[in-house]
Length: 171
Image 1 (cartoon, helix red, strand yellow):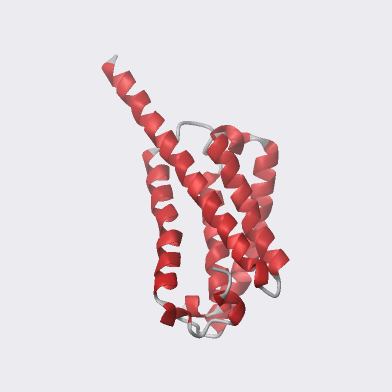
Image 2 (cartoon, one colour):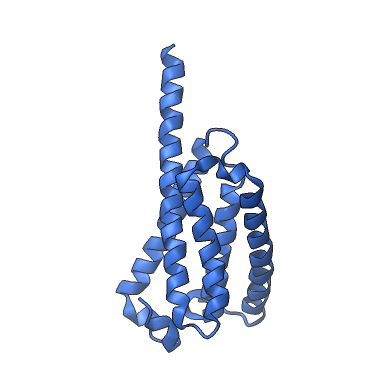
């Protein structure tokens, strides 16, 4: 009896952490959509981040939403389109031999879209069974990364010195 109670308690905590990670990622993707406001192709990039923000928010509110057909279709479509754009941007970065990807706009776009793809794939079918330790641990690590990277670039202004002006003024 005590073993069953312990397992339920663990599953409860994993579920809470999973939902919190999705709320934080929703906030991050919403912030990423917001900072696109002064980008030359803002509408495209705002949609690219707003869709995952809404999908993550829905998981934060109701984790089993990932098993509904509308959620899966929207997530799959976003993953498919984003993967195609990531492949094109990745090829451009490779072809031009760019190594410091955060210093190039294409590199930042590549990284941001890759993050949305990885996150949405991590979320896929997370509502079927209790989320496991591996998924939650991966989610926690991924959730921390964009906030730490954003803070790092915000604090170290010299890293942003050669960015275009529209990348320096939103936040």
